[in-house]
Length: 397
Image (cartoon, rainbow, N blue to C red; front, top):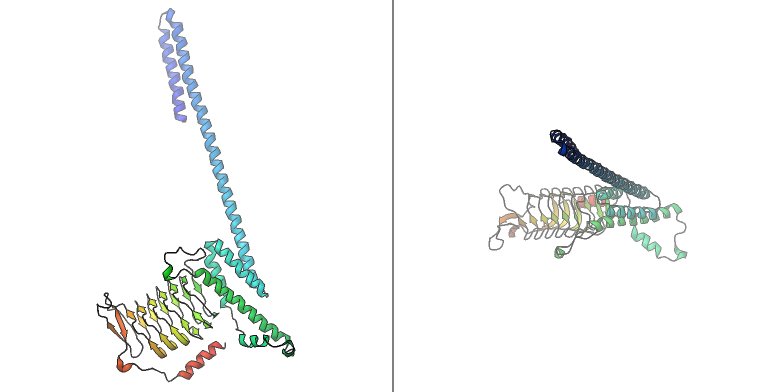
């Protein structure tokens, strides 16, 4: 715009000079009129240049005003984000402080506060899950709930009043801590629960937290339930599971590590899908380990696993299946399917064989696990007392 204005001014001056020179050579009768016309044209062009300059100044002023407005909006947005971040940090800090309270009710409030922060701030979800997992990893001695329940049913006159008060306080505190831990487990499962296979047409639950890792290494988990949950990685190394344990149709999109874990009762992984490696090396199952219909997308490692009854009926093994040195009273691999390939390095339990299936049954030529009739016997190991002793020691810790 400045160039246009300057150009108009130059053109006006040149036109005025040319017209004035022409007027100087005209007769006296026409000279005056020509000079007046030259002045008029020159002034008109100069006025146009001035108007262009004024317009340029106005446009520039408008641009500066808009830029200042955008800058102010950006500054305001940054201030609001900074205030929101400080608010989230304050809520998070206070909730974490509540988890360290000696009062169980305050700890419960801290858990629900963390849940609310995570629900409203997706980028903070993994951090908050890590805090809850760290809380569950802290040492905890499970109370004798049966003894406490029996004592609560006695008449007031028969209550053991002579029992020292600190012991009663310890028992009550352990029961309250149990409720806090059960709540923490339930909060995790609630937000990791996706949808069942027969509900694929339904939208994703609003409260579902995606791509979450759980690190519960060495944790003591009571009545653990991950039915229909979906998570990324799961680290349960040397964890102890007591009570009813159920993980029906659970989905692990990355590695699931249960090495050295102790399941003090039966556990169900029926319909589970392990998209990567499933590691149960050295795990102990006091009851039935149910993996019927489970799909192992990576390697399934049960090396050195101790179990009573293991059921893998209709399970699918895509990666290597390693049952080397697995001690079991009875194992069922009936109708389990295996992806056939030359690079397989399986180690099946004693007595079980891998054979290629007939294409009339499975067109993709899946391999099937079968047990020869001459080897269909219960393989009871000679160290049952050692297995039971190991389980008893872990449960009573």
